[in-house]
Image 1 (cartoon, rainbow over the protein chains, first blue to last red):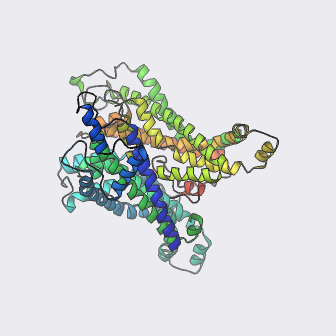
Image 2: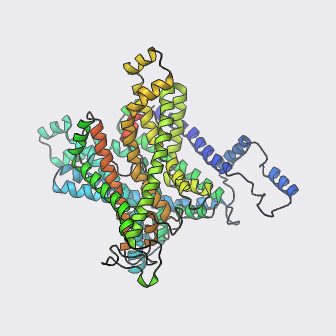
Image 3: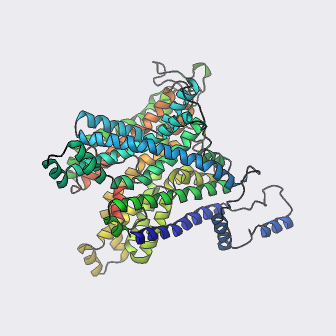
Length: 307
Length: 305
């Protein structure tokens, strides 16, 4: 088990490097230099001096090495648009907000999803099942901007039920719930399929034959054994949360990283976009790793299969 | 083939999906021909109307007929999605075939690169490409950006299929008879991959349509007067009447679900051995947009999921 964790941990390093290389290549691919403008700019001799000073005249692998070195010492460089902020400051200020939003959304999504899924599985092929399945499908496929915009326009700005922004606990309830809807639908579908499969296993029949209570069979035997696919759903869930955050943050006026990402993208603030992408990729890779380890702890067979 | 068609017909969800999809496509193709309105004609005296006999789906903020714009928007969104699907198909087939045929170290390396690409979340990735290419609102930039982050699942499935197929007796026989690698590939391997390829690519379709909408709503898609479902949704944001946002969202959701039912039905029809997971199987209406959990794991043990 320890060897498995260590090996997976070591794997993340080349993975992060490849992600950085791709973002770096894209950034270099746009060409140009910050000191060579289409019109005007500084005199040519000065351009060369600046480029040498900032190491921009080096071959690409030296530049990449510089970039990697700086990123690993948490220096993502300055913003191209706002000369008083650095990428690091934005990451420090805004990432925690987005992480908290995502965590709260997950806190809504997991019980909601498991509840809907178990409900559907227990009432297999009845009206309960159909209702649960339709509900899960709806919250999964309806684009997240519909829910976030409707909730924000009505609950926040029209009726003033909850405040906008992210300052109070009251303000956090609705955005996190809206963000949690799509993952809840996704989890519900997975859990329903897994529980239906587990219900047909021999040991469940044995438990039933022994005369155990239905509740005890469900929560002791069925649900825990249905959770492995749930962990492999962690990454898609995270992707849903990342995508949703773009819309939820802007609808509710939450000062998070996703909203800033769009602003930076529209302003063509390259170092900002690159820095935020690298941090986001690291978060995703680590979440990936955690989900794998958790799944392996439940089902030891995965250790051999995946190592 | 006929048996596959019969299996498809007997699958209720798939037939409904195909019918819904057909109705949507027909609407988008026919409505602009029959409609008397100009989709770009601005009329502020008649703006933000709900459905009425004059404007069957109402009018938007600029007084443009929404029926006309929904149909045109559907055409644009579907065109974007179809071209993107074509690119995904080619990229996935080539990458997967090369990795599958090569095997060994190269295969291993190529799969690791795929893992790294999977680690870049899709929507931010699409945004980066749009920013870097910089041609604002160009339809082919949007298509390229959408497809560049959606071909990996297809590549994995193709690779898995080819890795299995190439050990088959008939392939080894062909090779023993002196067939060249490209002959083996195009005569024996690719044709047997087409079924899987078709389904994989269809499953990416809802994700592409959704991401097009996301990009447009964020203001980085096609430029304003052009109608796409995403642009219409963007114009419906923040209105006090939800109708203007619900209409395009419903079209997107309907399209996504319909395509998914069809893809799922095709999958069952083309591969009768596949266990019938029934209505509540782990089908995934957003595949392409989020990663399918179970299928990919099965296709690539050792992947860094």
